[in-house]
Length: 392
Ligand code: SAH
Image 1 (cartoon, rainbow, N blue to C red):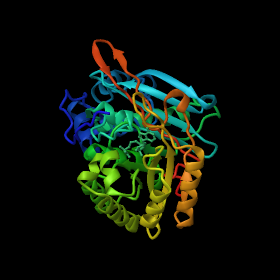
Image 2: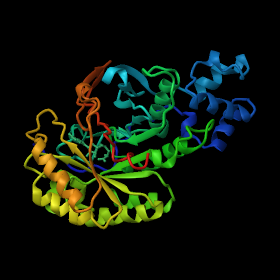
Image 3: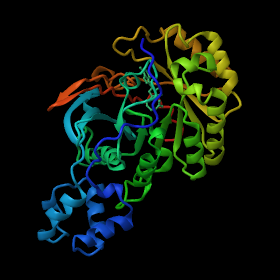
């Protein structure tokens, strides 16, 4: 297996066109004024955008003559759907999006009886180089802009509201940053996205803080920043090993911020929010699934405000690794629970459409653009996506 370098600085590419969702309310009002329109039109546009309305003809509260100009200037289409793939009787839907420069990303919408969750991407590719993750093995193409990230959630909210997912019209209730990319390596844009997700409608999607989950390999300074900024979103840490020796290999950022440092930053976050964080742990046969590692993890977490979410590994192409067999999974769960650590195992929504964690490697050729691997990360939630279960 090739060992990739850690990449924090995203390659610079041409910027996506300006979009309302990248601007503060004041900036949007100024932009509208520059177009010769009264500032309040910015609020009208925001209302349409967050309601999923992109067709100027439907913006009947705007003067007909100004609709096209305002839409072209502030609501350019940044995400073009290339295809949808459905599973679970249509209740799981993965969308492949093409961005303005041909980069590809995916999001996955999952409808459950009491909630609907979208898993969104924060980067095209990923620089964190985790060897078991298809996205990590593809390298980093670029950071997404805030509007490119927000647009994935807005599209999911619109799909729910329009009744595109079986079960009748509904509401998007949860967002997880478990698609492609490392959200905390694209902090400023993710921070803006959080604002848009949490701001009440009509100026945002109005989600509850605990219904939004940021999943990270453990970028410690960014976890600390999130803590200082007083965001009460749900935090998920991709641990995958309780000991530094193994974690250095499985999650290479561990060579910068080790297990103790990551958990201590997560503890401080949990102290602020008063809620458990989630530990993501992909069970890999004979790599990290041994009983002694379960015990080690149990001891590490017993006194912490944490919950473990075990994910049987979704094998990626070319990898020699496989999921742990069921008896090993059960033993691992039993040992963690015996240590007093709340533990769940994720079910695998969307694995038949390569929509499961780290699984997607859809190399697509899009009009003259070299093929870019689009591993989609996955998302599954289980019996409880630990990331949400007890908080959601
Ligand atoms: N970069 C962030 C979010 C992306 S992935 C992070 O690492 O947390 C969401 C989850 O899927 C992470 O916990 C990741 O480690 C896990 N994952 C990646 N590849 C996987 C695979 N092949 N099988 C199971 N889980 C995987």
